[in-house]
Image 1: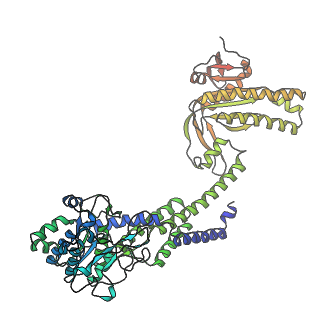
Image 2 (image 1 turned 30 degrees about the vertical axis):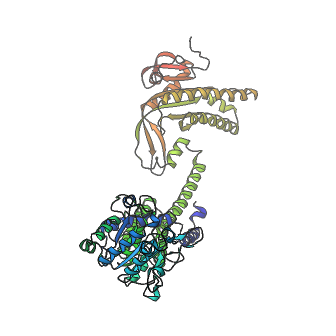
Image 3 (image 1 turned 90 degrees about the vertical axis):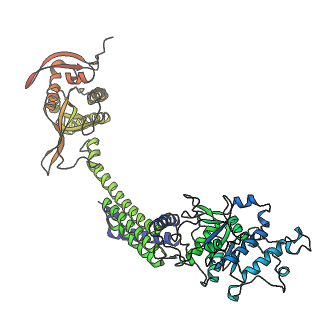
Length: 610
């Protein structure tokens, strides 16, 4: 019955196709957004519960709006203030100083007279840099010129600042000059997670890597910035450092900076900001849109700590993804879903464990592999179920009513299911004088007539949401209200009876044209509480209704021979319908096997009184 879907070879082929699909998804990083979402959540968890302290905490000196409002010079001409800052650093003696500040790409000597000497902007800044460089390493940040696709030059007149002429260069020839890129690398969603290595910028050294190199940790770094290390950064206001310098407050400067790496950068509200997975700015809680200098500080913190985070081995991700695809072979829905949920939780826990050991496990593609396996298996099982239901429907729709078949296919009617009480209206219909007719008609003609009659009557009953219970000779029994519950089963039953008589008129017109005697039927309706369910043995049973209501409906159908009404119903039916005028009160009538009851009748020719 399962056909092609049930063959083992077909399942193996489907699994092979699944593996190929998963391999392609992993290769092309289809699940990258999910990788990032899960990774960020794991990072925040580890940062909150298992954060590692930084070995040599980075100090951020922030140029903020408050400082710019307190000086006359524009940000491009902060040379005297930066020189004073460097003077303060010479007192503080940090381990290294990095500039995440765009130093000028042109000379400003024209702003002062040629003989200004010490008042020349370039000379003031250049001399301070040259003097400070003799006491601690300095790294100047290079910014990217988007228009010309190159790094901007830093133009400061070092030659005029020193006697004899000097250059601002590093002492270590392998490190080159003391300049480095301040570029950051954003992921497709705009967040900065990766360290800006050669894969995303045309420069070997970055601000943080060169600062780390001057501190004795030189290598070409690559990987992910470790946002789990340390807490949120606070910054020392640039303005405050200048005050300490003016007062020659060695104690304050030493306490804040001595022996520590220092980063100078802007902490403006809107300029040079980027999205990161965690909250880095202590002065802005619940904000992940942070100044760029904090990203360089976190990168430096990572490098000088346990190092950048490295991706877990590729083979491990592929192996775990292959393991998740084995869910394809679990057939039961809830069992497979439970295993998938447990495996996913275990994978997330493994990712957290790896993160605490400086490894990044990309979980999104692995979870996607499991989801694809479940979807593939559930899809196959759904197709098989649909095939089985179609087979059952095509095989048995002629044996049971659509409502019963619908309940069976939905799993609501099952063998061994207990019977229940419901309110229903039971209909009996019988052909008058059929025994006499059968004596004069050939059997083939008689069966054909019965089939046409029952087909028409069944169609009407089903149209009005009734269930044909059984055919007995030339009679039929139908139930309205089970297995499908109806709000007013009596209304459905009466309307079905009326339309049955209309359809019978159509059949009779054809019989009259063929020179045959027309059919006459009687219908009995009674409503009340019945017991419905499976009746019979485990091997052979049927869905039916039993009870006094069924017996009374059968007796009422026999009564219309006496009262000469096509439809006879009990008072319970009339009462449920609100005693409509189309029903004629026939008074008390004896019912075979029980006391007399008030009955009502309806004929197609009966017109309701005005």
